[in-house]
Each structure stands twice: as C-alpha cells, then as structure tokens.
Length: 436
Ligand code: EPZ
Image 1: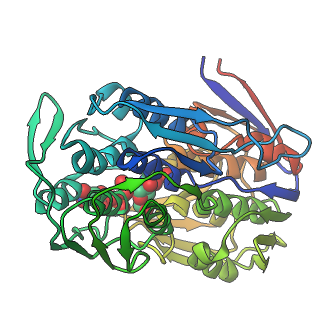
Image 2 (image 1 turned 30 degrees about the vertical axis):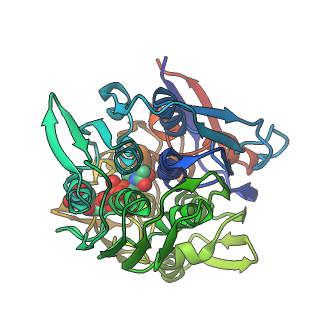
C-alpha cells in the first residue's frame, strides 16, 4: 500500500540535520563497480528505493552486494541512516538490464558503458517516458559508438557489442541541451578500460562526475580534467576494487536550506559541501536567506521576508534543475514577482498545478514560470508526481496554514532518506500514514 504524508504547517524548524550521501553519485558509482576485479567498499550510501533498485539490478548481473548496518547519519535519537556497502563481481555471464527494473529507475542506463567495456556485450531496456519530460539516451549511445561499440535495437532494448577492445578517441559529447551527466559518466567508465587515450570535450562538470572519476582513479584508472568540460582518460588493462566515500547529497542539502527559509527557521546542516551549492547560495542570498559555513556544516536562517528573484537552471556550476521546484515553493511566499526558467528539462513543471491548489499564484509560459508571491499558502490534498516536485510540496506544506495531505510519497522515498524523520527531529509536524 502506498504511503501519504500528513503535514500540519506553521512550525518553525530549528536544530541539526545530517545530510546523507548523494543518490545521484551513488547510483552511477554502483554501476561503475561492474568494471572492477575484487571487492569495492562504498561509504555513505543512502538508504533509498532507487539504491535498492540498482543493487537488485547488479545482483542480477552477478554482483555480490553486502549492506553493513547503518552507522552514520543520525536523526535525533533514532537509529542511524546511511552506511557502507561492499560490492564484488562474482559472475560475468548475465549482461542484461530488464525493463522491469529500468522502467522504475532510469539510472539503470549507467550499466551500459561498464558492461560494454568489461563484458563486451550489453542489453539494456530503453528507458521510456518520464514525468519531468523527454529523456533520450542518444548521447550515451553516440559516445560509446565513437569508442567502437556497435548497437542495434531489438524489442525495446539497446543491444550493444564490442569486437576486441574499445578504442580511445577525441570526441564531443554535448547535445542540444548542453552536457549530459550520466552520459559523461557512462562514456568515461567505458573509456577507462579502452585502448589508448580518450578525450571527452563538452563533458558534464557536475560533482557527481568528479566523484565517479575519483573512485575510478582509486581503482587504477588514469583520468584527469574531471570537474572541467574536457576529461582525459588514458585507458588501462584492468581496474581493481577500492574504498570510497560518496559525496554529500547537494540536492538534499539544498532542499533543507529551503526548508529553513520557508519556515522562518534556523537549521544546522551537517556533512555537506557548500562549494557544490555555490549558485544556490547566490540565489538564496538574494532572496534574503542567511547562510554561513563552518567546515562541513552549513548554518541557514531566515526572517521570512523573502525577496523575489529571477533564476534559470543550468548545468553545474549553475543552479541545478533538481532544486528548481523547491525554490519555486519558497518564492511562492516572496514579496513580489519571481521568474524561473528551466533550461535543462523545459517541461519539468508538474508541481505548478499542485502548488496553485495550495493558494500559490504561478503562471507557466513555455519553459518559464512566473511566480506572484502570496501572503500565505493553504494546506490541501496534493499529489506527488516526481521526486523533486514532491519535495517542493513538502516544503509548501510545512509553511502552509492548516493540513496538507501528500499522496504517493513513494516518489520521495526514491531520493530522500527518511525525510519525515529528519524533518520531525527539527520540529516539523509531519507523519507518514497509509494512503486512503
Ligand atoms: C542526471 O540525469 C540526474 N540523475 C538528474 O536527477 C538531473 O536532473 C540531471 O542529471 C541534470 O542535472 C541522476 O544522476 C541519476 P542529463 P541525466 O543527461 O544524467 C538531454 C533527480 O531528480 N540529454 O544531464 O539523465 C536531457 O534530455 C534526477 O535526482 C539528451 O538530449 O540528465 C536533458 O535535457 C532527475 N540526450 C539534458 O540533456 C542524452 O543522451 C541533461 O540531461 C542525454 C541527455
């Protein structure tokens, strides 16, 4: 049975929140483990349903995965979350990612590059439609083709094969919408075991790409330039298991920054990296939110007089599309008109209708949303449509007058580790109930 959240808005959030390891780093990194011989130990792996799906997929591909008892992120007096995970390839016979798993998690496409490089064959179901818009994988396929892989499509699957060994080359990897995060990681993983040098021009610069490159280098890869648009990879003959800590989840961190701001609260966010959120800090500064950092902790407070702003989502280091919906929830309560433009996924606006049900005044014009600030939001029954849109509705519910009922919270469970426990521990009135 699906769960819902009941949120009674109005509580001011105060206290400490431990940020978990990054979902979007952990997913491709788990897939990259297909490349290595021997055991890899990953630390700070969040407990999320998407991680469970990736673990299931890797299990079907002959990986032995062992989850240690959680030891890290704490929520008040509750048991710790996060934790270590060991992964080792023990059988390389199966190279197929089934539709049943791919349809629940698009990041399954991350196995394509590692499988082709290591097993010379990959069958990956083509990811279908998605609530945040069209999400093609043409750039992944083109990049791997340039390394020498051959592709056909059969029965809804991408079937890739490699004769001999992949061969490094210089290639442009960008597309009409700019760089691709998972596409860069897929091709970088494959190039790590290719013959000769690969240069990826127009590569994604996101911290998740850098995190994966750092793990691959610990495994014996020779990668430089990660974190810039030009990544150089000198292919090696083999990679061996290593130990690696996943970076903090910058999107979870940004979501809690906005939770502090929208509730007029004061939060201390532990285990995070503000350098990964520089554009978010810039926009929140202009909104009037106070942000201070001390080592790995971020202090966020707000007096809830929010200035309206303009914001456009961009590839890193720009403002991330994965925080667009949450910022929109915040700007619903600003003193004036804000303009939000979505440049990565121009149709990623399913939260607009639901926020308007809560009393917001948002008008969508193409890839832009015009947000007229209102004095207050009102609790209502609303529906989760995708992960980040749902997070925006949680934020709106925390600030709204009265009760919000949020259905289909399985969308949130894909990417926020026990969000209701973390919120409760800092004073939110939120409870998980069975859906009616
Ligand atoms: C990653 O998706 C993230 N997912 C997304 O987070 C995030 O929104 C996105 O990067 C952008 O930052 C994971 O890391 C698991 P892209 P990814 O390829 O890599 C177009 C969340 O909420 N494109 O960088 O799949 C594409 O349509 C999720 O946690 C092509 O045209 O995104 C988009 O317009 C949702 N062809 C742009 O590039 C391709 O082959 C950037 O997408 C690939 C992408």
